[in-house]
Image (cartoon, rainbow, N blue to C red; front, side, top):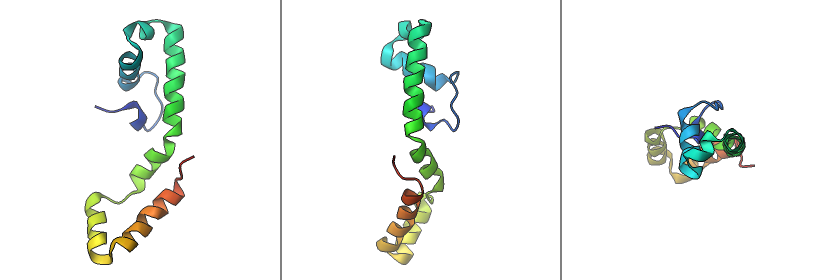
Length: 92
């Protein structure tokens, strides 16, 4: 089950957006068009604020490759690899 924060592109119609609104605010808020619109704006702002995390996730080496890097090059070299990704996509 995908979380709305993991969406590659924003989609108001995605089931994870509906699920998040209903879970947080209830079905009645989803059924009320004004409240639904306001909640969608809130969710989209949260989604946009996590852009760095989605970008980082695709750039990090796999766990297996990270462990191999630690084994062969040590923790300090592994930290450099991870830091490069974090520097490329900083938290705002």
